[in-house]
Image 1: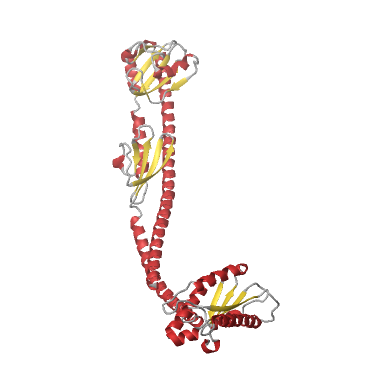
Image 2 (image 1 turned 120 degrees about the horizontal axis):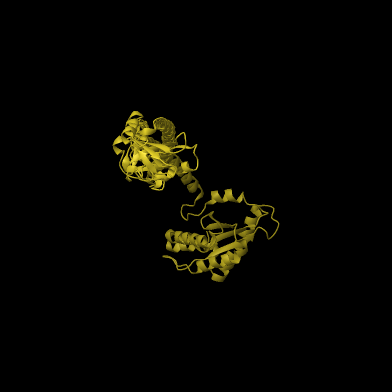
Length: 457
């Protein structure tokens, strides 16, 4: 039974250890994944920042180039006044200067001439895109180039640069479809930088437009251009950076194989260790059990299961005369008569019954010893102040007893309290208790009319 309990305990310990290891591995893997993901996120953000910086520098160089073209066209028109209203000539100049549109704008901000007649009459008040250039009317030394913006007439993606002519009589505006710009931006777009990033199996990187939720860059190029979809089989770590949300996804099975191997190795080790532990513990418990059994046997009376004389001799040596305790000497009355009349089974019944009554009354407050055939000693070391109540319980238990062979039982006892006088030894206490017990026994025989000499052991 004990071995079975040890086995169950070992299995429980192994199971708990494996569960704990699984939790630890999951925690460690998640922390490692978190660290790796943060490194990847920072690298992607660095790519985004680098691209944005490159784009800004590139756009700035284009703006400078377009302003130069606008000034060059202004010089040409000033040098050849006849072309100011000649649409064909202005179109030739536009082709020569590699621009798509030329607009001549008066000092009120209205287009009065240019290479595309359909725009004549549009002014700085015609729309948001045109309104950008209103500041030109207040500063004749100003030159401007607009970012790529949908134009007012057709919402076509254009870049416009504008400058005053030399005599400040009109403004020259050039418009360019930013094909080269878009091509360059395409080459430096985020997806190229992200696609080349190394990642672990089961891990992906995404750069998502925070407004449109469209994937603009990913390690898996097939995902670029798609809208973001949450997948419950993946964990996501995200960071918002400017107009982008950078995300690293990890599949739940990413670390499962390595976890399984680690758990298997630890499980085998724990099982072997537990088996060895069970064997060792069984041996230790067996030895302990044998030792306890020996101690119990050597200190226990076989018939009554009370402590025996050996235990009594050892315990009285530990008693302190300066502390409070009670010594009770007890002896059954009429045991010999019972043995002679009804046999030793009836006598054993009385001895066992007496010990049971003693245990019921005294066991909670001290120890009970059988030191002879029908002789007992009780040492009370607790609740000494409740002695009278304890004795009343004992007397009541004795008087109410009825057995198989005998209908009643009688016990004589003598009581000595350690504090009632100055004793010189424990032996003095036990002698006084015996004297009082024999005195009570003598009174019992006088009252009952039984001849003590005939029937007492």
